[in-house]
Image 1 (tube, rainbow, N blue to C red):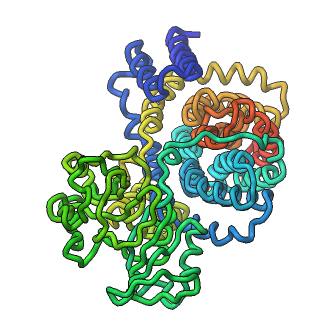
Image 2 (cartoon, helix red, strand yellow):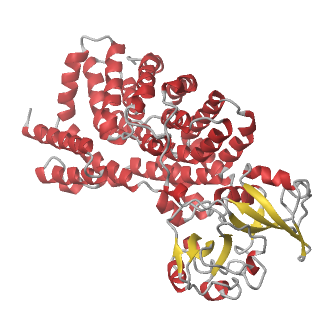
Image 3 (tube, helix red, strand yellow):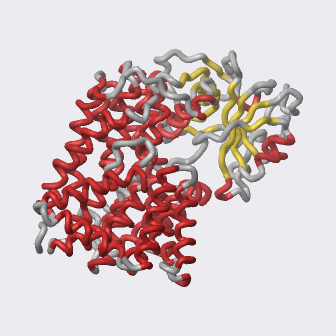
Amino acid sequence: MTPQQGLAFAVILGMMGFFVWGRYRYDLVALCALAVSVVVGIVPAKEAFFGYSDDIVIIVASALLVSSAVARSGIVEQVLRQLGPYLTSPRAVIFVLVTAVTLMAAFVKNIGALAMLMPVAFQLARRTNTSPSFLLMPMAFGSLMGGTMTLVGTSPNVIVSQMREDLLGAPFRMFDFTPVGFCIAAAGVVFLTFGYRLLPGDRKGAASVDAAFSIHSYTTEALLTDDSPYVGKSVADLEEIGEGEVQVVTIIRERFRRVTPSPSWTLEAGDTLLLEGESSALEQIVAQAKLKLAGSDSDDATEPEPGAAAAGAGDDFGVMEAVVMAGSPLVERTPGQAQLAERYQVGVLAVSRSGQRLTRRLRTIRFQAGDVIVLQGNLKQMPEALGELRCLPLAERDIRLGQDRRRYLPILVLAAAMGLVATQIVPVAFGFFGAAVLLVVLKSISLRQAYDVMDWPLLILIGSLIPISAAMQSTGATDLIAMWLSAAGSALPPHGALALILIAGMAVTPFLNNAATVLVMAPIAAQFANGLGYNPDPFLMAVALGAASDFLTPIGHQSNTLVMGPGGYRFSDYWRLGLPLSILVVVIGTPLIALIFPFTG
């Protein structure tokens, strides 16, 4: 072992030690590892930052943005809610939810797909009297398996594809991962549909921040437009969208005629509806029924003119929740009397008053101390306005009421990008970069939202580890490890050597992060295969599959961490379901990879 190789091993082992310790964030650890690598001389100073311009970083960042735009479209939640009445048993609910999140994760960032469907899971759990702990972990594991089906489904696939290009001259293509990934995912869905019984059903999830600040009785005012699909339908039909969480309190017809409608009341174009319910359910009804919220784009003189609240706001235009405090100038005044539109450039979208049902139009409501209000306007100016109004902003939540949903545009853009990449008309990096730019230009996602959805720690981790991975190769450290593995693997049959790499990836990724696992292990696997005289492709695939199959701990992947609190899981619960699933992946994945990617050729 040369001194340079020793230094490379010291950096890698030190970095892994800090990852396992968990005292410092992994992006900070990666930055420090890069700095140490430059200081000790294994990474040239002029090459220290080339990792941040690598195609891997561009692809992962673009995929994050595109997947967020798809998630915000709301199409999947709408489809699942329509299936809800037909799902009457826990097994049926688990099968549909796990299948949905698995398929979505093939095209959308896996944690994004999971987060999008978790509220639907809680609704179905309440409806079928099923413990959420039976649903959430299978969904998390399904999101991990779904990511293995396509190039952009998970970071390990993106990284191993680019590393194949560096090592062998050509990357993996968009659907090269699909035969193995689909079969693994299908077997995993079947296992999780029946194996959920391995999980404890008595776990009680911790309340989230959203739940702690949940407001269940917002009242908002909306206009039933001419193009709404609910014109001519009954109140019950409209309320069905909210699944019992929204009620039509009052209908105002012909400006002055007010009625408290029965469920069979027929809706007409031009009706003004006072709706009461939780903000996410209200948003669902407004979007699906094509209602027009008062306060967001109104012709009333006491409310903002179209675009008035947004004037000059651009991507900073959004909504915020606040509590009207005692002594606020809003108390006993209406929005018009307080000049919210003219003086503060904000519109009132909804009001919640504890213990009372509001049946008056928003523009005529006189605020009281303790009212919770949803305001729409320039988010940069909103804090100053709330200070002058003596309103206390609530903890930030994802409130989408009043925000535009362009349902089909993200799906079409994603499909076009994947088609262009799959047919090799454009490179992967440019295809998804172009899709991300197009979605921002077409305002399917704002610039503010685009920056918010970036997983900056992950991008920094990847950019920092690419030069370190290159240093492992340039110093010969990967060759040395491959030689050691070859000595052990020479006594094994080809399938045994492949299983060894797959299991090694599974064992390392809970502690090293899946992206870091691929960056470290892919060159080793390629050299290991070459040393044994095998085709590197099956071994690179095994690294990607092993790094993505993190089912044993709650800390290795964000999807596992996301469900730990809401599901009330303990550390040991992950082994109950994850260990059999990991064995299943090895047993099925090893011969499948060998079949599709032969050892010779």
